[in-house]
Image (tube, rainbow, N blue to C red):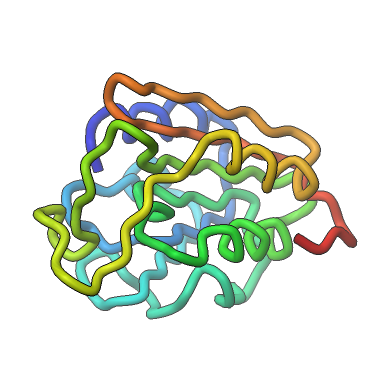
Length: 168
């Protein structure tokens, strides 16, 4: 994770989180886990590695408790099913909970989820469009804030208060 993404998560997670779910927790080039030293914390990823507590897909993983904060850093551009991941987050997040996510958008070069290097053949990558992201999130959450930084290809989102009974 690059420093700007770390700063975004750090600055937007001021409310003490008791239960944190991190989707895409494999530590390739940095982790946000240290920001939440007192929280019950589960990090999931599709592949084992440093920072991964459990193997799982963000579109289907059901945590043992409703998290009040879900974090997804630099992951959604590597997930062809990113819409399903976000819909599932809205379903498992506690009432009044918050989603914080950072991801690549136009302007960022494709890169591997395995090591951050060149994209190998057969590995999915797709920059996330901010308009499409916001359109997907609006029916799922009461509050949606989208921030783009086209000069570095960054897209950030803070969404809170999941709407119940809405299917994405």
